[in-house]
Amino acid sequence: MEEINEWLQDKNKKYEKGLQLYSGSSVMKNRILQNLNRGYSQKNLSTLIYELRQLKNITKAKPVQEKKKPDPVKIITPPVSVQIKAERADLIHRSVQEQVKKIRLGDLPKELRPRYRRMSDIWYQMCELKFVFNDLPPRKEKEALEIIIQIEALDQEKSMIWKEIDHWTKYKTLLPLKTDEDFSKLTAQQLYLKKVNLGNYIHKKQKRIENWMEEMKKEPAKPERVKIQEQINRTLKSIHEHELNIQKIEDRL
Image (cartoon, rainbow, N blue to C red; front, side):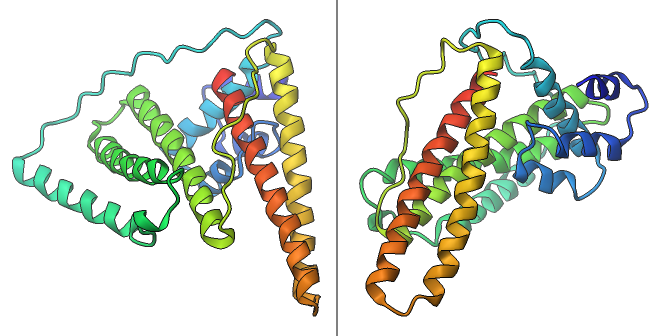
């Protein structure tokens, strides 16, 4: 932790050192790490600083109050012409259609249809934020970080929805869409430990699923393959529920 604090306070931060600290930390997220591994950029450095600050914040052992969303940073970008606005709107529309064309709304159960519509809204928002990010004047680091955080949150939500839809497409069963867990009375340290334990559980179960998949490929008897598939399906549901709980915890930290 001391090493992370020193890096955060260093005015001449080495990107590679920060990446090393993040990759070995308990707040590491695979999706974010993949982006960071692509190399230095102002966006990646801002993300790295933000993520490592989260680890610093969760060490405070006091009850966690319900988080209030901070007022968004006022982002002022140069005006664009009517033609450019129209071109961007058309590009966003085509991009959204390309994203969702793989699945028809009518093929989904009623539980997933609102999620499907929400995914379209998310993609619109992400595209619009990306244009705003590109239009930012130089040295608008605070505004850039605000946009990055918004895009990452939307991207994470979109990934969860795709996972739910993909699971239905493959197995014709629903992943849990919410959990009943209440973390409001836990301290920051308790939340942190809970998140670590859930992460470890998910990792172990994912390894087990990989082994089952290999067993299923080698199993000649169809009844046995069906049993293995049912095990995989149950475990995927359990993993998804834990991922939803991790999201709840991250919202409180």
